[in-house]
Length: 260
Image (cartoon, rainbow, N blue to C red):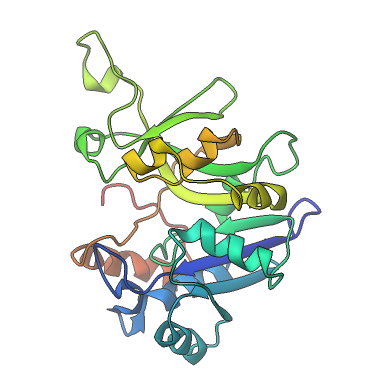
């Protein structure tokens, strides 16, 4: 419960991801990656319910082995949000706010969730997310790092894999202001109902970013600035970066993965 609203945390867990198949079952310090994420979610006091939305019986068996709650969703779901929509439409989970916590991001912690839901009582917001200032030029140039620009009230104007904004004048990088998107989402129940009827948009298909579908159909996405970020496991080599950080998780420390 958060600010008198029930909060469900859904962890979409696709087994055969494109860049790193079966990563959610990859062993990390004696546990599958998905278990680390589940245990991180359990430490967040704001959630009324936590469910892993799986698409394969093998993942379901792994979740059951460590005592997690799972629900089977379609392999046809194109992204994590569609798994949330399926659970909502089928009436298997109900909540005022739905948090979408990716299965390969075990370094998310309660402070980030509190930042995410800081404006949960504010009217006129459909989706909440986070942004963090870009400090390294390498991140700016990477298509794996999604950039975002917002209006004065913190609502997203556009997300892109390209650098945003474009600085016409040649000024030093340290004097420029760029933000990257931290891919943690929360939705109102009404927003999920609307998303269920949205067809894919041209921009979403061009950039391969599901949040552009939300913008294209008029949803309001509010982003709060954070000093934290998670570490998504997109490639096998990312597991080596994750291991040392999990020692902090076991000691119940707040994590900041800057510099990874």
